[in-house]
Image (cartoon, rainbow, N blue to C red; front, side):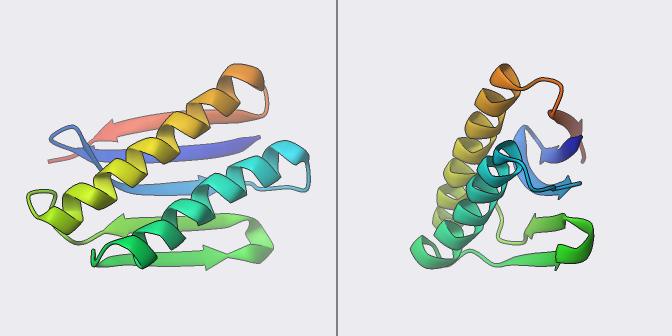
Length: 106
């Protein structure tokens, strides 16, 4: 099962980890959403972030460094919310293949 863990601060997404990618079409959809989001943040904003991948174990971890109160942080936040919306759509269609957990952090 694919697991997406979303961390929020004051309601805003600040990081995520996606684990257990496989080779199904659902995994491909999740990968596309996640990678497109990261690429979009990099190409369309000046937000700073870290990204760590482990392809062998199907894991990608992303942390937004730029504060949400800045224009680039706000723009990155919109893209992260769009990613979550897409992931939630995948869960609606494939609840036994993908789970999403969220955590609020201060």
